[in-house]
Amino acid sequence: MSIDESSTGGPGSVLLPAVAPEVLAEAVESLSGRLRKKLDAAIEGCAAGAVRAADGSVGVRFGEDAVVTLRPGPSGVVTEADQAVCGCLLAPRCLHRAAVLGASPIADPQEPAPPAPGPDPVTGPAAAAGPGAAPGASAAPAATTTARAVAGPAAGPAAGGAEGAAEGGGLTAAQVRAAAALWGAAAEALAAGVTAGGAVVQAELLRAAHTARIAGLPRAEAAALRVVRGLRAARDRSAAQRLAELTGAFRELLYTAGLLASGAAGAGLAGAVRRSYEAGGSLRVYGLCREPVLSATGYGGVATHLLGVDGAHYSVSDVRPGGLSRARGAGAASVALGGAVLDHAGLARGGLRVVGATVSPEGRLGAGRGVRATAVGGVAWGEGPTAALFSRPAAEAVAAMPAEGAEPGLLGCDVRVVGASGDHVLVRELTPGAPLLRLAPAHPHPELPHAANLRRIAGHPGLVLRVLGRPDLDRAATLRPLAVGPVPGAEHSLRLPPEWLGRADLGYDRLQGAHFPGGADGLVPQESAPAAGADPLADSPLWRVRRLLEAGVAGGRRAVAEAARGAEPAALAAALRRAGFGSAAELAAALTAEADRRPRDAFGRLADASAERYAWAWLAAAAHLAAAERSLVAASWA
Image 1: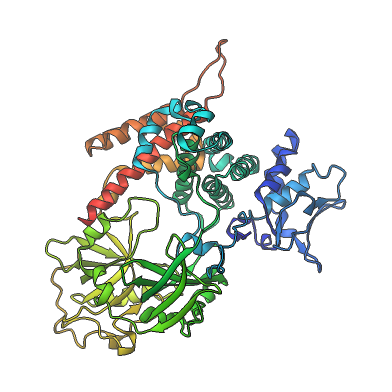
Image 2: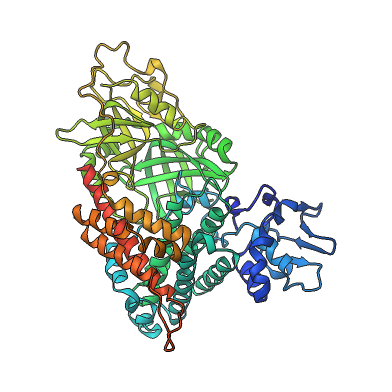
């Protein structure tokens, strides 16, 4: 199991070992109603007094008579209830034990090792999420989800029976029941929001997530763990937490659990625990570039991107605990693949001939006893199989990428520098009628040279260069470059050393003055840099819907209901309809109306409103917003 230290709750909490979700859920469930009300207050600050003993156990003292001791197993994780003990008379159903477990970071479930012939060279959860990506990134729901979510509670878990789902959707009855339980817990957590989403609400989500894992729904479980960690970070006011990320995590959880519980999903939505590696035979691959990997959970390393002779994309990763120093040093580390004698810097500009290759579904090359690799010469960008990366306009390449799900692939284009806009570089593709594009740092960490290299490039308006990067599908016409090089035949382009083979990795190589054309005679801007490029996403009134959804995540149902009682709903609907977003206006109105709904029983007394009806209304608006924003982003590339 891996440890998510970003979810810990104080400066001393790094001493606490990670805890399996089911252990924490069981401890909270065993508390009385009176003790549950005191749990959040007990968790605050208790981790600061943690003390590690010589035998590896961790103790936390409560007053004079109670000491909680955590004794993690060989993996460093508390996986059994008897590994957490308290010396008070109420143990194990005591507040002290539950508080310490609640202050401990949540562990990820153990991921099985890749199958024979050998282990995966990628170590740690950061590599599984993709290079440079912080854990918790979630896929946007499909457009068809909007229609189902708009249908309301009738389309929810109660609409599909377990038996029908087992027959038509490929899911078992136990999976449908587990998904329905997770949907209910997620709906309650959404209605509570960050302000009321304390340890008890989190424990209910963890219990449902564990049930989902037992039933064989790892994707739903992973989504629930992301929500719990987000709630913890938000309540602890962690600097690394973003409300937009937690909103996306809720959308992914509700979408996954709701669709699974409705009986309309196939078995593919359940996900897979194992990242299976399959035999790839003999491969010949060429290096494209290196990319630093730095995750919020303390992992660091490098991913070297490769291209096969048939145009297929591959990668070799080396990601381990170590954070920034590991990410900076791994760029020159040796490649652990089939005995190949070269480092990642050499591989990024060279090539490999691999015999007995094993390949993951994401294109990662595995290392094992049966894999043999030999270094071969590389090819310059635009030659051999790499020519296809730069052969079509960027708009066509973006349109051909999947609308959601997997991380966007690499995209290559030739551009001319227009100027700077904040920390972005405004460029225009060397294609007639091409739109203005933004180059943004692939990783914002100041100790990595991405931003510094882009600032140097921005200082040379009129410069033409070849860019290889990954489009940011959450921002209008934005490309996050991983490497740059000169445009063949261009007079005013980069001048890189011959040993760089016509490319500079922006995360490792640092561009200097000698790498740019001498003098400024030929560097005449073709156009003046605008104060700010047109951004259809930022200029649209959809930000009002986003603010409403995020207010619901932060303050719960009550915050959305309060917004419904002022003048904001009318202004929101009017602005959306004027811009042509009529469906968004209707869904936002339905959300605020459901949030403010106060049903009464047969005697006229106020009754609790349905959290599930509110969750469906929230999901409908969130799914529509995601689809509308994706459409605007796609249009910005055209």
